[in-house]
Length: 224
Image 1 (cartoon, one colour):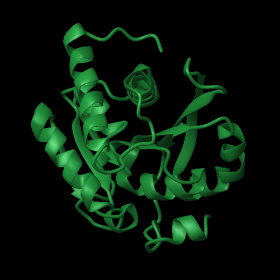
Image 2 (cartoon, rainbow, N blue to C red):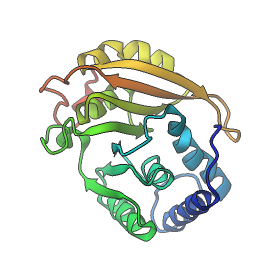
Image 3 (cartoon, rainbow, N blue to C red):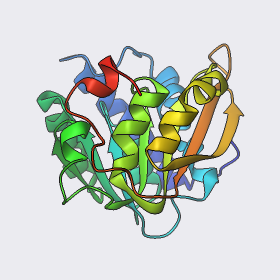
């Protein structure tokens, strides 16, 4: 990733990693235990979204399935002007996210809920410029969870593994049904990990039909 972080920002991001790993000793947030591995696998991986330019300026962003806060917390720290919402269905993770936001005084808030439910709520539906999702379900599933949340003209940024292009082929019809179209795919690597990763950007070109997202669990159990 070719991006220069201000020294202060890098210091804060490393402090974020330290806090995640400290809390991780009490309950499981991540399987990564080593600070340098966590820096690369979580922070640098999250910041791969910055070169897209989609997170510049004041943007309303929702991070779906935020978990331990990546990419959401890292992006909120790197781009303080973002209006970030971190969405997760697990209460203990949401408590951690709320505490961390307060600790680092981030411009972010937490919503404890399922994306299927949130996506049918008028307060959240089509309310965001960008939705992000990292390590959340299949391409079809995550598209159904994210596309209803972004406005027409907005974008979904997805962190995917080696099979991203094959996933896109098999989920093309589902993405189009949900109002999206593939905008870009960028391959990248992380030095401590074998294989390649992909950053996929899907642009929302038309309104998502009202029947999506379907009720809780269906996007996963019965993918489009």
